[in-house]
Length: 193
Image (cartoon, rainbow, N blue to C red):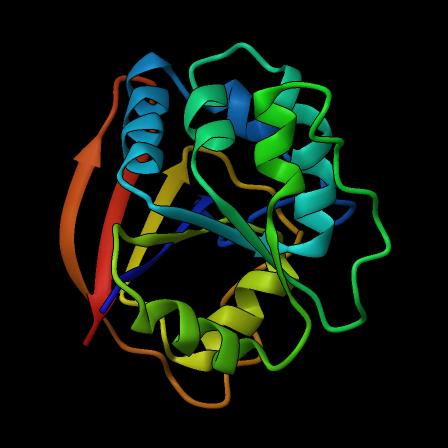
């Protein structure tokens, strides 16, 4: 059985992006050590999953990117989850091996929890969830996340998009690990309590 991990950057006041999706604060408050930690986490995954909006953004960016995140994002298989179908265009396999890895993404159009259970039932390295606030809220609601990796950045946004909102009941977590980095980012790892 595969483990499902979630990775999100979050402000100290609980937002994963500004009200209009702004996330430049992640890059302004991160440092080389925190970035290396995220890259290390990405490399532990056997599958990257995300919602269709995040997938469109990432699929248009990563195949030509050259930073440290590019290799694990392009080399590791992907799956996307969508309620309405995927209207975007997958990058063409003829462009590059990196683009091909995005073009070969598996698309789940049905029930999110059912798709996650199917993926978790397989063998292999952990599944790592990326995404926007909406996808992560839906994923949290399934109760199927085994490990939460929250990279807490030293910034208060005042308003924005949370991921722990509209919970049907309290979601208790157990702190498993904390790492702090020179720029002030703190990586908290939680397991369901």
